[in-house]
Amino acid sequence: MSVALIGLVSPPAMAEPATEQGAKAIREEIARYLGPKVIEKGIVTVKPNGDSYDLVYDLSSSKLGLPADGAQFSFGPLATRLTPQGGGKYIFEQTTPSLDFTYKSGKAGPQSELVQRLKNCIGKGVFDPKAVQFTDQTMSCESAVFTMRSPIEDIDASIGKIDFTITGKVGDASKTDLNMTGDLLDLVETVTVKDPANPAPPMVLRADRVHETFAASGFSSPQFMQALAYFAARKAGDNGKAAQEQARAKLKAVLPLWQTLTAQIRYDNMTVGTPKGIIKIASVDTNLASNGLVKTSNVGLNLAMNGLVLPDGMMPDWAKSLVPEKATLDFNLTGLDLETIAGKMIEAGTDAKPAQADALKAVLMPLLLANQPKLTFGQSLTAPAYDVKGQGETSLLPAQQGKATVSTSNLDGIAAALGKAGGSDPGPQRAAMGIAFLKGLAKTGPDGRLTWDIDFDSLARKVTVNGQSFGPGAQK
Image (tube, rainbow, N blue to C red; front, side, top):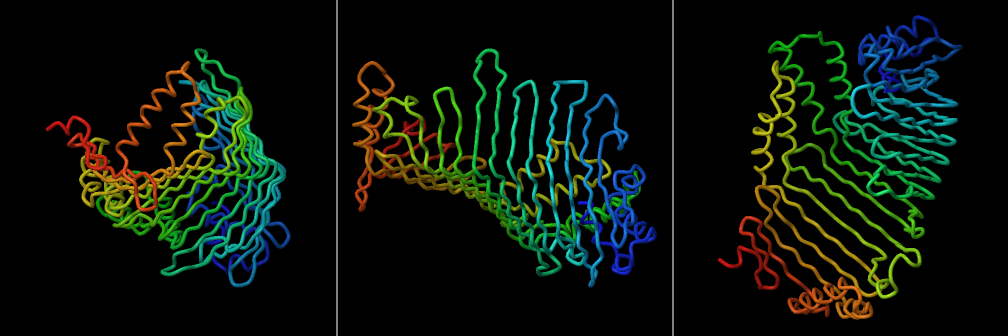
C-alpha cells in the first residue's frame, strides 16, 4: 500500500528532480494516510537517488514498539524505485533478492510460527495518482517457500515460480476497475497432522499450476483512501458527536465497496499423496461472484472437480464404476440487504461506546431476515455407472423451507455394481436396499431419467418426495 500512497503526492512535487525536498513531500503524503509513526519509526524511508526516489518499506513488531512477550512479526524490506513521469504519473521498479514475512505467537498460549519467503522478485509498472491505483503492473518471483508450525499441524510448501499482472482504469463516479491474473507454478505442499491418537504419514499435495484471477468494477479506492486519511489525522479520544458523524460519513462513502466482483482459483494437474497411492485430479476450480454491499446483494460460489483418478487398490473392483470422475456444486445467496447491515455496523462501531456483540446481533438479525434471503443450489456427479443432477432453492431464516429436483440416469447400474460386492460386507447390502427404496419413490421424466421432486420444511419437520411425506410432521 505504501507504494500506492506515493501516487497521491501532488504532481509538482513529483515532477521535480529527485531532491531531499521531494523526498520530504513523499514522506509527508505517506504520513497523511498511515500516520506519522511509520516515518518516525523508520517503517517507511524515502531518499533521493539520481533522478528517482528510493522507497523502502520494512515493518516489524519491534519497530511498532509492541511488547516483547507478545506476538512477534516482520515484513520486508521491500525496496522500490520511483521515477516521476509526465502527467503526474510515475514508473516504479522493484528488485528484491528476498522478501520475508515472519510471525511467532506470544509466550502465552499455544505456540505457533510462520515463515514465508519470496526469492528474486522483480516488479515494474505505472501508477496513476488520479485513479489512486496501478494502471499497469507486473511482478514475478523466481520461487517461494512457506513453513508453518503449530500444535495441530505442520505445513511445508514451495512454489517454483510466481507471475502476476494487474491492470486498472478509472470508471464512473471516480470509481476504479481492477483486473488481476496470476500463476503459481510447481506447487508442492506437505501437511503433517499431529494427532497422537490417530498417527498418519504426511500428506503431499502437488499442482503443476495454480491460476488466479480477480476482477472488480466500480471499486471505491478513492473513497477508501479519503477515509484512511481521515482516521490517520483524527486525534486519539476524539469521540464527540460531530466526530462520530464525520467518521460514519467517511466509511459509508466507501460503500458498496464494488459494483461487481469475480474471483477464480484453478488447480491444474493436481495430485494428493496418500498411504495407498497418489490421487490424481485434472483440475479443481473455485469461482466467487458478488455485487457488493447493496440492498439487493447476492453472492455466488461454484466448485468444480474434473478428471478424478484413484490409485489401484484404493477401492475394490466392484466400486470403481461408482466413483465420480467429475462433480460440480453451485450456490447463490440472494435477498441480502448488506447495505443496511453494513451501515448499522458502521454506526455501532463509531459510537462513543461501541455496542456489545449480543446487542449488535439483536439489531442485525431482523435486518438479515427482512428480505427473506434465499439460497439456490445445484450439483452434478458423473461416474462411469451413472450421473446425478440436482437443483433447488430454500429459505434460510428462521427456517429452511424449499424445493429441489434430483434426477439420475441409471440406478440399475449402481445396483449392479453393489451386487458384485458379495455378502461379506454389510455396507453394500444396506446401500443396495437404499437404492431399491429410492427407485420405488422415483418417477420417470420425459427424457427417461428417474426424477425425485422434493419439498422440505424444517418447521413442519416434514419432507415430501414425489407426493409421499416422511418425518415427524408427516404423521399429523
